[in-house]
Image (cartoon, rainbow, N blue to C red):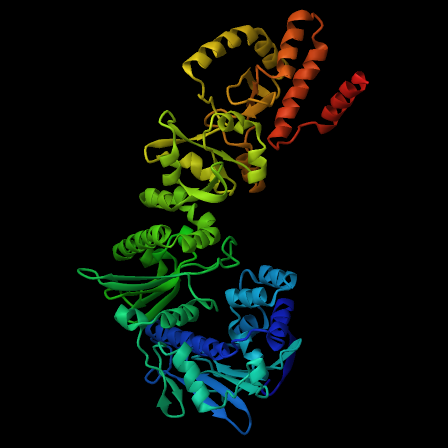
Length: 620
């Protein structure tokens, strides 16, 4: 098979990305070299680790390095490493297709935007990696041999719909990427990337901290100092930003940088970053999470999930431990006490950083919460140890201000002295909640209500006992006590007065509701439907059913407004008439109206429409 050249087609999403790069409007094209050096660095990390774990792997790890070769006459630039290399299948899988989650969403959003600045932001957020080579090259040739393999592979493409791939018997271990450069055009931000001064400038700016030597000719042009091991006073914000881009493959600067230095019986250093934007796969199942784990500056593991919980999956960074074994597995990490202690401290540090951000940089906090708040609130379900710290950084919409969100601490500070609970309502949108009849009495009496519209809100409000000594109380569940002592006495009299009607309606609507009672939460609507205190909300029921979990049918409670003309009229008619069949239809309509008012679904919409049409006809 030696010398047999195959021509294969790119996966459709890969084709679209390549076209984006070929016709790129991205102004900072120098970053292609950062991406290639970052890939080479990863390959060297992986070879050293594999050689440590597999003693039978016949490889030389004495002089692991990255070599840059420039040929001004041929106008080519080659980035070469002697790292882990790739097999044929890996080349096809990693370059011919894009396995990165969120690709479809990224391309959809890119197609929809007409704004060049937004397009650049999206490209930067997604990260393009190897494909960025086509911003500066008409053709790219890659030659690679996986460590331990007898034969290598050559891959080549001009970035159109196809690429060629063929075996190479005498390929060196590692990977060499050769770019056949486009003509220099400074107006299009295309520079002479065979110029040694330009290459050195780019490496110094973007990749100076790479732990492996980056050589141009015989000279090593990077300092190789691990940023997390340097004193904080000696590291600039630009250096932190470029390191973040290296480990995250995000092209945007981080929102926040966090350093941790632990000394004593168990020493470790951490350099963590909060991104400026949520990754497109933040809520996708196939997402990756975790930080990089090093032991004494030796790379051990990518995406170390044991060091960062699921709800902080957006945090990127490096943790360098002094006392772990290099031969550590994920199974050992799950049980390792030192790892657990590191995780606890890192989580507390991230949460305390956000709390400080909330106080000292409210605009930055607002951006953070807008990007990651939904994920952080998942921790209220899973992380009971840090639940109070998470509640301290939660922001919610509320009836207090139509534009600004509120913290729970600010909500509590505004509570009237007589108010015992934190009132909230969950729903699909702010508009739906604000138009709900459940809100009427709270608004009339000046009580603030939290407006919770994220799916996770449906679950955490039931799981969290309270905040700052106050219980969370849904305004759409249980009985609500908003009345004064005088109002309560009047309500007791009305309850006696309406008792027969309520009992009759409970019987008539027994298939739909568990009880009919008078309401203290309505002022203008005739009726509303509420749940018992510990019943799941209708939205939560839908969430469970959408996940394939069927729940037993839960009957709710119909509450009537005893001052509404429709209800007082029904009450009068009930006392006067012996033929109550037409009144049964009125009761059914009243229940249907209450369901629709909260955005619920009618069990039999055709019957409801017929009843309404019949009533309207009688008024003509």
